[in-house]
Image (cartoon, rainbow, N blue to C red; front, side):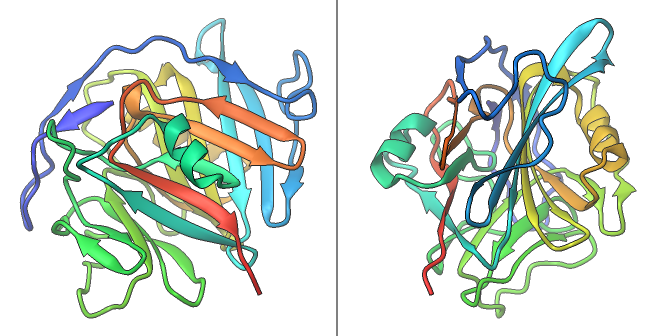
Length: 269
């Protein structure tokens, strides 16, 4: 997890404190990753949900880096943001309570478990928007899903949103442009969301301390995931990803309690 001080409208990105983490327990079904495979290719897990696991040995020399990717068809699934700053929970506890197809950690939060930026959960807004930096993953009530770079497209309070999470930094700007990130080279567990050139939403998690933010941005843009834009979510001990869809069972738990999570549910007609 990265703990950040509160962020008000128009403020610069808050300072961050990186917390060392240990490796999680990762439980995978036999169909989700062939033994020793460098790339499973896309596996259909459920209606609107595809998964893929990759192993990259080029990020850190001679070290196999696992990367887990979920690809979602917004027409077939629904995003739900949950926010409970007074009762934060480990990701596995959120999953046990709501039984989603997919669950991933949300954005940054303060030491008292308040989000550092805007969150919209089932149409109810919490907090204030970042201004001039960061990005927003959002969904409208009619099922449209997008990521907007707040530097170029500021948040409009008049726009009705069904679900939204703001975070920082943008990793890939619209048009597959790699962001220039002034990070310190710190490697950590990483969580990101992205929209590909076909309009599908991707969730990407690396559960080992392999990527700096700049390295993750470059990897995403150069991969074959066809990413048009991508946004960093909270990382470090906050990173987590659960998938319970068809025969696929992924369990990468957070190491800290989370006040916000992003859930993926089947879309009903």
